[in-house]
Every structure is written in C-alpha cells, then in structure tokens.
Image (cartoon, rainbow, N blue to C red; front, side, top):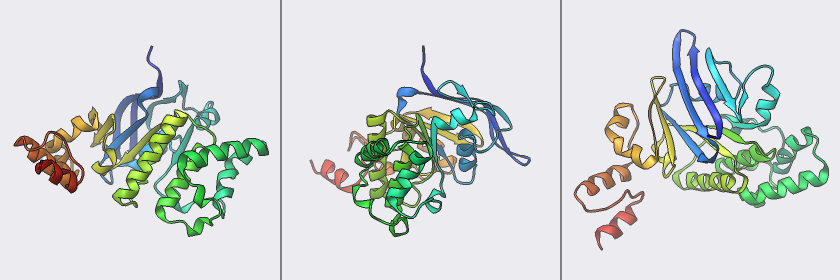
Length: 272
C-alpha cells in the first residue's frame, strides 16, 4: 500500500475570474524527501503554497497530509503536521534574538524547559546555526535568515514543510548551502519538503520535479530527465542555465558524458 504524505485531488484555484490552477492532482510519497514545484513567475506560486498550507481556501478540490483532510474540523491537527515558509517570511520574525525565535513556538506548545533545550540542541546541529544564537535577528544577512527560518520550521517536528521560493535572494553558493541543510533535515528527521521556484538552478539533482504551466502539470519527472526537455522549458519561459546548455551541446558531440554545473569541471573533462 502506498504511503502518501501529501495528496492533492482536483484542486482549482482562482484569482477573481482568472483560473490559476485547474483541476490539479498529484501525490507525494513519504520517502520522496524533497519535491520541487517549478513554475514561471507571476503564475500563483505563493497562492498555491498558501492553499496547500491551509492559509487560503481553494475554489474546489481536496488536500490531505498524513491522510488528514484539510477542513475546518481538522484544521488544528492539519497545521500541526506541517510548517510553512513563505517568500516574505524574511520580514516577519516574532522575536528580537535568534534563540528567542527558536524557543517561541516550543513555549507556545507548552514544552518543558529541558525539552526545549533538547529540541533546540538537535535543531542547531542539523541546521548549522551554532554561531547565530547570540545574534540579534536584525543583524542577520539573507543566508542566515533562511537558516533560521528552516530551524524554526522544524522545532515542532512536522511531517511536511511547504516553502515558497525562499532561494531568490541567495547567490548560487548560498543556495547550495541551503539545499544541503534541507537534505540533512530530511535525512536526520524524515521531514518531507515541497518548495516552489522559477529557477532551474534550484532543482538540480532532485529525484522529483513537477513542472507547472498555465495552471496544469506539464512534466513530472527527475531533474535529470526534465533538463533534457529544454525546448519545452524554454517555450514555457524558463531560462536554461548556461552550463547546462553548454553541457547538452558538448554531450551531443560526444565531448562530455554528463551534465556539468561549473566551467572548471568542463575544462578538466575536455583536457583529459
């Protein structure tokens, strides 16, 4: 029997008279780890995440997490199973210091002092924020803020975390750091991640990417298979990263045997 952590069935989301997502259905198994929803800009990525998180009500359709249907009756149980990081979460921390921000949700959940310390120690080790604990949140840079957002999102040990394009303010090196932290959280805690992005660089090496265009699922495959659909991706408005495009061309002429992500690797391969 399949063990689905998320089930989306016949979901329709409108913005006034405009249909953003039409009869959308997909399922995510518990062992999939990290799944990206690749959408072009200004198509309703934030609206979709807010709907999956129960912040907005869909026009029709059903959403379930851990076999728990999102409804008024189940709402409190539903949100206990998830965390949500929105694109503008950078600007809405609740406390002044990093340690207070980590403690806040646990205090609200009536954790005891020793339980709070144990949870925070584990979270700190996984998210690598040891050096941030004494800092004021106002002092943090974008990378540090994202690390803190991830840390606060896992303190209550949700089953699933929805993320709305938090990578857009990070450079490529910083993105790799955050992707590694997400993988560590998934490995250490078994938490599934589903995030939206419009940048193909943000889906590198993922086992599952769902490409959405004009409100419908166009592709649902591994990252490696999807980047070979470059003509389709370009028509949908996605920009193919330069190194991926170059690798594809070199591969066509049998000069390389895989996709490379930086110029040094390509040069080393060509000079062998």
